[in-house]
View (cartoon, one colour):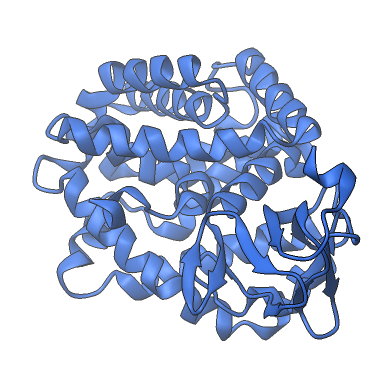
Length: 346
């Protein structure tokens, strides 16, 4: 199902600690659902490969993660335990010492999935995680909340994202500023608010499961941030994943519909530059636009319009501050009619 397979990639990355808990580990999950989760992450990592600096940042975080001590007394584990090691968790996982070791192994192996950017490594780490931690997840959450329930919940949360973003004017300005540190914080806030708004009615069971453990959405995000700050100072790797996640959920809007093909127009014709980012359809107005070959087409960044000049092909980009590093969307523009523009026709 197309809608099911296009679950928000940014949610999967930003909230890996609990979304992957279900999507990768629940033993009763259908095989196609698990495959969808892995494919969704793979789409994000395909975008990481287009950003060499970001790919290096992710690799650096992965290397530091491999060296992170699993001694319960070493940083950052005491702080993580302050958040996650509740009396309820201790009881379900067989005592304090056993619970600490299981939390450490669970979090490290889950983070290893997050920073696995190569398809072969991703699939291997996903399968290893499922095999090693299925019993832990079942002990914590039981068997009555399935991966399909989680998918439906996250899809409902995805539907809330545009409303949350639209109502957050201050952070929309931050998006336009290109401050990725602030954008990262905004993205976490948007995701948290969307998940909270969606956690009513039939999806209340998820919040109930967390509450029964002494956990909450906020606590899981806080615990994730402790690990990220230890292996990924400045969150460079996480920001690279966030950029890739945003890019994988960005679409040109043609006549109000998402368009993921080349943009075709005739020489002399003009079309509006509209973009949907994470379902927010006004994103094209807060981003900047650039065209590689102005002999083929031009953009007016003030009116957000694209005009065909002469026959040929060129690349269109939407970006924050720097089109080389901060681009959010890029696609080929194909102009027909007019005289051939030599270099672009080769």
